[in-house]
Length: 96
Image (tube, rainbow, N blue to C red; front, top):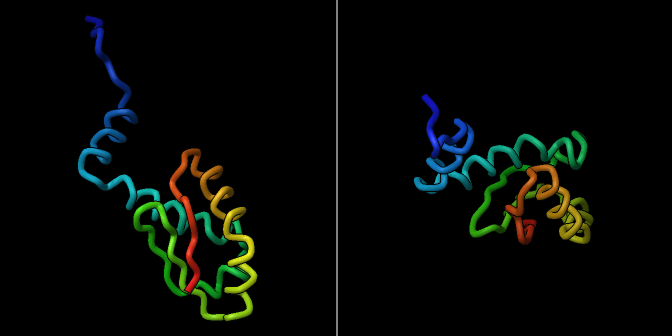
């Protein structure tokens, strides 16, 4: 028996996450996972806290020198994150 409106399991899960406003939390966890991959383990080790709110990634860095360097690269970092995730999740990054 074939169904005309058949959906893949992945599409159903994505829709369920979106309906329950959990999609941003999934992306936040993915960003946490890829952050050391993007920056390298040494630089990422200065990260104390990260969260996403309204398409803005907030990152607390415990080194003022590294914070300033990352601030200068924030647009490129946001583009890299979006590219790795395969969708536009981050508009801006704020370092604290």
